[in-house]
Image 1 (cartoon, rainbow, N blue to C red):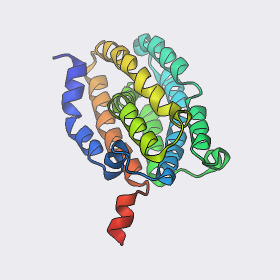
Image 2: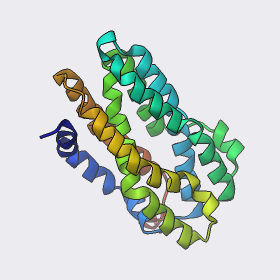
Image 3: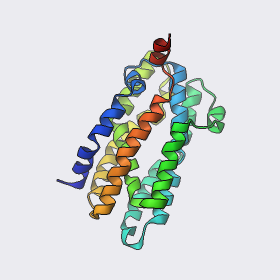
Image 4: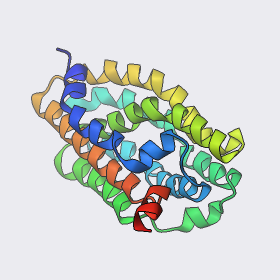
Length: 223
């Protein structure tokens, strides 16, 4: 079994937990309000704004024996630069205030997701951050286009309010092939364990981020 297939197998339960989050299910069915969509984008802005700094930190912490990964890190960085600005533009196109989103304080769940990755990179293993990359890109290929289509249709928003989701749905298909090729070159058992650990934990932490976003189901349940 390739390491990539092992990663798929050992994160199956965590991925299943993420895909069962009510807010995500509602989004994929287009059953969310404009306010909920903007709330999602706001949290996405906060964690996506750290993607390039995460990669830069990872690259700076690699020991000499792992520096073959720098080429992949640079390629990821070039692909990810500026994506947080796409999200702010989507917020504005959806009728939100992008300046307010930029200056807002992320929810605690989002802060924990961000802090966990910085801590893991600097304290335990920089290679482990590939687990976060796997979580983000595999999730995008599964839900981005479908969710964007459903929410766009139900809310009657313009396509330009979904540039982040549509771009990731398309980009991350090719990204996943590149990721698979890269991660299969990781042969150190400790690095492999670190990647699996981070992937499992970030699926859970991202599920918490989504659970923290208000949605119609919560309102009805409370009533």
